Length: 142
Image (cartoon, rainbow, N blue to C red; front, side, top):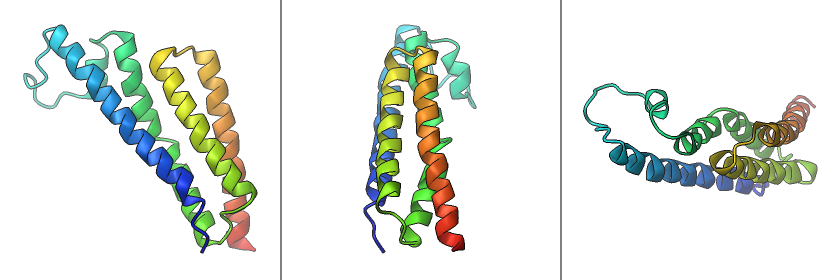
């Protein structure tokens, strides 16, 4: 089994953890500055908190949530391609493109967050994933 395609997935996992720490590193000081006691209300949720903090703080949380959504399909697709010994060539390039575009998407959303650019980045990464998913299906059927 060629495992090279697992590298971009591993990079995206590490990036997701970086976003988690970036989110916490901005949310907790923002809460303290606003006098919000995060231990005051049991059962609080992130979206409830996001409504109370400045947009630039909430954007990091929104992006972290996004990294827990569509990339899960990417991880599954990468594993399928690796197991089917189809994790090389075009699929490897698409996996790296997906991971890099998602990292750029994260940085953009967490800092600038202009939706028109963010949407284009999302579409570009989705096209990479779609081609990989079709190739994974092909590799497992034939």
